[in-house]
Length: 192
View 1 (cartoon, rainbow, N blue to C red):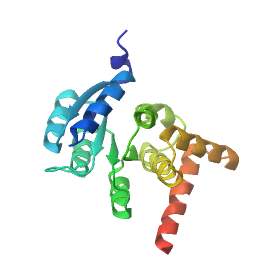
View 2: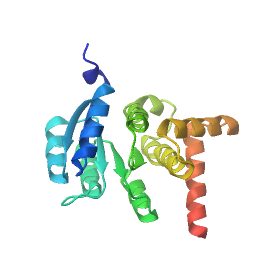
View 3: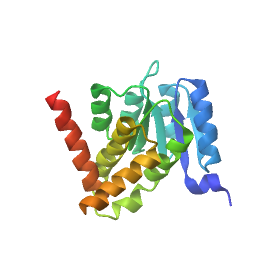
View 4: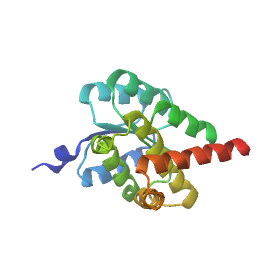
């Protein structure tokens, strides 16, 4: 059995060839079929041709940005996406949220942090069985995980565990815990 085909096809887009090679190798080792591009225009062409199940997008690239590619993937192909960026300022995070990213990972990245996030993004249909709206799920759970990763300096798997413990402690769903965390962070940002 080909494990790459069983886990899914991923488009990885980053203008840094070293990052692209590292991510591609790590995701292939984890059982994913990887297609890569080093710019936004090629990313759109490859997405149209190969129809991946997920795209990992650098935000700041020459030509079309990751935001441009994400909007195209969302509006024309219905392909979910995860942002990878060295930038975590309020404006960037707001744009990530507005576009409906499945997750937001802040560089520098470790493949051990990325694989659980990618697997979670591919497993969203099973989470949808919890009766959570897919758009809301894409919005809150990954943002909460990304916020915990940055604020607490955790890997994505550790951040997910923290969020799961928080949900268990509060007696609520993962979605509700994530929503509460994101809303608290937004309120905190408005006070500053």
